Image (cartoon, rainbow, N blue to C red):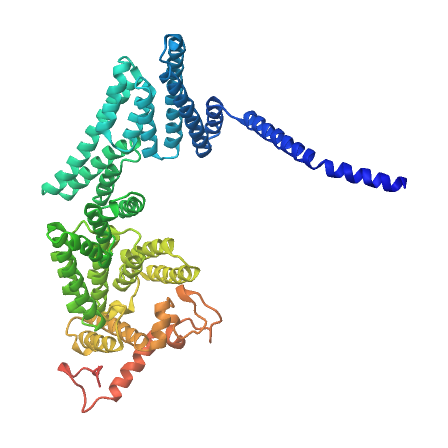
Length: 595
């Protein structure tokens, strides 16, 4: 029974507490809201504190975070300022006049702080190179407090940075109204005026190059002066895009320096990709076309000029340039085709016409290429002196032209004089300096070694010179030269003194030796590699006179046979081959070399 009573009491107690639970729940909810309001009030940050956080981030060079804190400071200060202004506007009775005055004073003080917050954020935007927002913040600061001279001068500096020089001068003037004796601002305003003068001078120098018929030397001098002036402008105004365009123009006119041309093209690409409006700027596109032309990229030049003419069909300088480029391309194509068909004489003529009539001399890269191509055509004609001359011009225009060094070296060796051999060795040294792979270096060193061997022979007997041949002589050339020289120096044809006849006999022996070696491909190869003529038949003989194991102990040529013995054998053969007795005037015992 007691248990039942207890249960009943519990049930009654439970039933009667429903309304009490609602009251408790409502009371708990109100308590939670009060706690939340207290927490919100506890974490509220003042505009002054936001500004301090911004300053800390700025000092740590975290400018993006700094702009966030300054933005919070600005918004908080603006809300507070609006509340103060609204409160002051409601103060209409005499009893509230004092309060209104206080509110106005407080609003003025807060406006000054708000202006400084805008100034701080403008400084952070400037460090982020966000110049438009920096200028807008300076304007906002001045709108809040027109006497805030820091905003005037900061705005002037940013305007100078982006090249808005007239506006920068106005900003300095407005600031100096409030502080006429501000020495730093006066000095900076004078610097802006100097920058304007330098910019105009650079443009005038470039315009002078267009208007005058000055020599290449004078034009290069004007370009260097313009570059010097505009670099000073950009040092003070690093984001002055029009000044960057002038710098690109000045660099592109320094045609004697391929590195400057490359710099101009790279800078033009950067300007087109980072600055609005310049990707369609015809002046910039024309400069890029000029850079490509002087870099030897004629197809790229034509593409850029077509872009200009598509939007401006009456652009005279672009039309004239594309006409020149097309004519130059056609003439070079004609020369290249003739060369491929082994019509070297026509190739020489066409390359010459391209050089003399079409390609501007200041285009050193393409002129150098044309000279090298003509050198190759001269080589095809075996005109080695002309080949060397064209290679020399190509190298003068482009000191890193490895192919020209290699071609000139080979042609100098074909000429064969001592000074030619020395020049070839120097050229191979330069070519090795420019080589890119171990295989190239190995090949060049091998050629250089052969050149040194040939140099060691300079001043000594030269089998090629004995037959009046160049070193690239063909089998047919050798045969013809031998017949000509043998006929000239054949002893039977000599009518002079005994001494002259003996000299002719000696020369005749040497001519036969030269023919013996040069008409045999294997012997000729060994001789060209540097093996001495007296060691040609020694398989162990080394270039430059070195020997391995000798055969039979004889050091003479032709298998150790003495040259006099060889001559006697030759003469005996000639006597046996006579037909009908002695031939030639005087009935000499020497026969004909032609059989």
